Image (cartoon, rainbow, N blue to C red; front, side, top):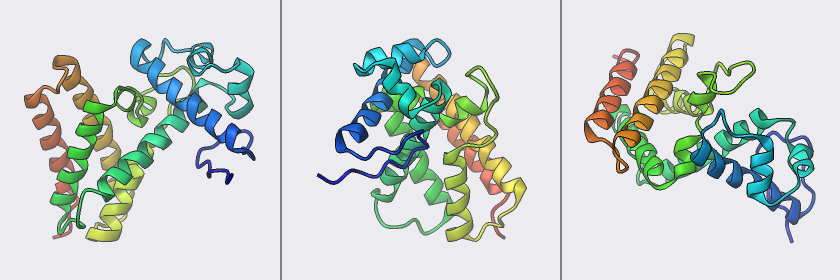
Length: 205
C-alpha cells in the first residue's frame, strides 16, 4: 500500500501507511480536544489520550504541543484551499475571490468545530506559551493568490495587511459562533466588511 505524503513538519517521516494514519489521528484528536477544552488548556497528554496512542507516539513525530497545533493549522489551510478551489470557476475579480474565500471559511467554521478552534491567527496572537508566530499560512496563501491572479503589488505592507485580515477575521468569526451556534449574522457581516476594506487599500488601480 502506498504511503500517503505527509505535508506537515514532523520529526520523522512515516515510511508505512499505518504510521501516516497515526499522524492524521493525532491531528484529528488535537482539533477535537482544543474544540472541547480550548487551546491553552490542551496538553500533549490530552492529545495522546484522545488519539488512543502513547504520549511517546506523539513525541515521535512532534516535539511539543505547539508543533502539533502548527500541523493542524497547515492541514486546515490545505482543506480550506481545496474547498475554495472546488467552489467553481476562477473568480473574475479580487472582490469575488475574497467573497468566495470568506464564505468557504465561515461554512467550514460552521460545520467543523476543530477547524474553528485551531487557527494560525490564534497562534499569531500568542494563545500558546512560548514564542508567538508572526505569520499565518492562510495569510500567505491569500497574498499569493492576490499577487499571482489579480496583480496586487507583492509588498511587505500587503502581506502585513493580509495578516491583519486573517487575524481580525478569525477573531470576529469565532466571536460570531460564540454569540450564535449558527453564526451571528451581524458579526459575520462586520468581519466581511473589515476584510474587504483592508484589501481594497492595496487593490491595483
